[in-house]
Structures are given as structure tokens and as C-alpha cells.
Image 1 (cartoon, rainbow, N blue to C red):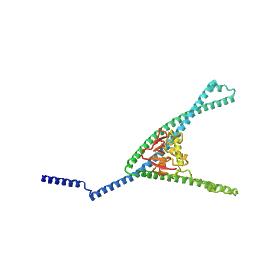
Image 2 (spheres, helix red, strand yellow):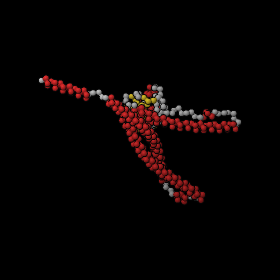
Image 3 (cartoon, helix red, strand yellow):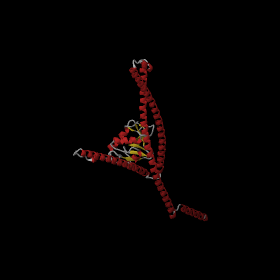
Image 4 (cartoon, rainbow, N blue to C red):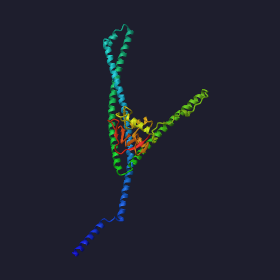
Length: 382
């Protein structure tokens, strides 16, 4: 029995030593290897972020360019539609005039031109009636040619409009694909990098800054040209007055136009909540308005950035026309309040609180209230 106990105790001790060895703390070498692995993962993630930052900037630029082209094409279609309506109204009026002319000729007895000439009493009367017949024929021919030309104009306008709409649909499909691809990348990478929103905003700000600089350069050039023209006009006027002996004088600087005070704001505003409420109220006033590419007409047709620009304008704030510069301007905020911009790659809306926004979604839809989706960032102009 004693021998059995000794064997049992020895077995228990051996088992205990085995368990202790199995759960022993990792060695310093293992910890170092783990640390190195973590550092490699960190560097890899940072490299991916840097690469994606460059990719985001390029894709955002492409999306912004596509949006500008879509807006321009939408404006062309709106103009073509208006031209078509005018031409069709003109055609209808010409048709009615022709019917009236034919009825008048019928009611007058349908006297032929030959009979008119034969009824002449003398040579002078014959010349007068021949001239009358020629004028009537010319008038009828001109009216017919004008009617035919109008019909051809309508046919051309319709064909151009159909082609423009096809191009718009193609561009819109490309635009939506780019947006979905970019927003998908944003969502997946946000799970890996905590501050990914700032990366997206940095890309948007870079694009907006470049756009603002281009617009500022164009405005400076226009002002310089206007100033030069005004100065030249002032010198010419002064010379004329000197020649006539006038003692009056004119300050040429008075003709130089001042810079536009309504240029797009890049600041964050004053934080006035009543201004923010005015933005929200303006957005609410457009609920149900049709989405129209290039639309800037409240109550008629708006696109996403047209809506946000209008809502801010009603609150006395001037912002850029397209979603790219809008999403890169103002002040970045992490906790949105009603009146802030909800920004996506190629899309914007007005935040109204409670996780909801008012926006103009896409062609075929209307301005509506919708829950904020995906991974937006927020900008404040009020």
C-alpha cells in the first residue's frame, strides 16, 4: 500500500510540473517577436492609409469634375427643353396662321392669279396687279419656308435633346459607380483606421483649396481687366475734357469695381443657432421638389448641392455651387447639429437632427427627409 501511495504522489507531481510548464509566461524573445509583428502591422496600416489618401484625393477630384460636367449638361438640357417648347409654340402659331390664310382665300372666292391679271383695265393696272400677285406668292412661299424651317428646328432640337439625355445617363452611371466605390473603400478602411474621417476631409479640403485658388485667380484676372478698361476710359475722358477746356477732373479709381463680397465662404460662421434654423427651414420648404441635374430653381428643380446652396443663401450665407468645395469648406465638426452639411463623396445634404437629413437624392426622386447613412463627414458654415 505504501509503495502504491509513493507511485501515485510521484505521478501527481509529474503532472503538476507538466501543467506549470505549459502555462509558463512567454519569454522575452517571444514578446519581442510579437512587438515586431505589431510594429509591422502598424506600418502596413499607415502605408495603406497614405496610399488610400492619395487615391481618395484623385477619385474625389474625378467625382467633383464629373459632378460639374453633370450640372453643366443638366443646364444644357433645361435650356434645350425651353428652346423646344418655344419652337413648338411657334410651329403651332404658324400652322394656325396658314389655316387662317387658306380659309380667307377660300371665302374670298378663290380667284386665281390669272383671273386677277386678266381683269386689269389698262397697262398700269396690269403692272400693279402683277406686282400684287408676286407679293402674295412671295409671302405665301416665305411663310411655308418658315414653317418648314421651324419643323426642321424642332426635329433637330429633339434629336439633340435625346442625345444629351443619353450622355447624361451615361455620365450619371459612371458618377454613381465612382461614388459607390469610394464610399465602399471609406467604410472598409474606417474599421481599420480610427481617424479615417480626417483623412477623407483632408482630401476634400485639398481639392476645395485648389478649386478656391483657381476661382480666386480667375476673379483677380477679371478685376484687373475691368480696372485696366476703367482706367483707359478715364484717361480718354480726361483727355476729351482737357481738349474742350473743361476744368473738371475725375478719379479713375472710382470706376474700378470692388471685389465680390458674395464669394463662397470658407469660414465656420459665428455659431448662431437662429441662422442654423433658417438653413433647416429653407431645406424643409423644398420637400417634394423634383431632383434635376444642374437644378438651382427652388420649387421647380434642384440637385443636391443646389438645395444646400439655396438653404444657406436663405440664411444669408454664400457657399460653393458643387458638393466637392462645399464638403471641403466651412468648419469640420464631429458632433453635428441641425443646419450642418452632411457630406459624402459627391453628395451633400442638410442635417436636421436626430440622425436625419434633408437632401435631393438622385434623378427620379424628390427632395426628402432621410436617415443619415454610410460614413459621412460634417461641415458647418453658420
